[in-house]
Image (cartoon, rainbow, N blue to C red):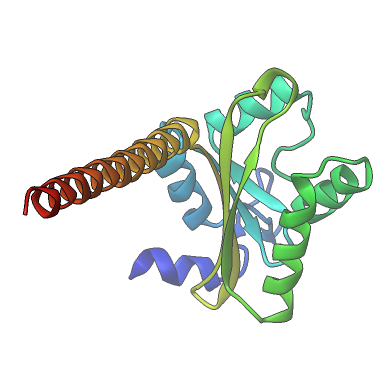
Length: 193
């Protein structure tokens, strides 16, 4: 309960280093520090944003992946919605659904969404799922952005679909074979009579 009480509180009063009266110094709410600790070692790429989509915290996987893409500015302080709009305007097709989903969240139509997209360039052959969820904690609005590599799941799903198709085709072939045998044996019986 104390964790959530801190989130809604204003900036703490911090005594100044000299003898002047205390002044208000803005710092990250404790909730963000706790969130940062929770996500740091997770393999998914995770970011926390404020209600205006400004990134407040990211984990190591997010930082590493952003650097691999050359998006070194995709760190705390960057507006994620503006970043996605810029990417979409530059022709990155995977950014357009993110912009559309965030705009639907902003309108109140939905509180979360997810979509799959295929990687390109060095990520050719990979499939990713982007999940964005808005939540309210302690009277403040936040959003989590999580990107998962679901390539193996998609590959397994496709293999299962192919196996299912092969099974259905095999069953159909077996039915045709049995039907031919029944037809042939019935004709032989009728001929012998």
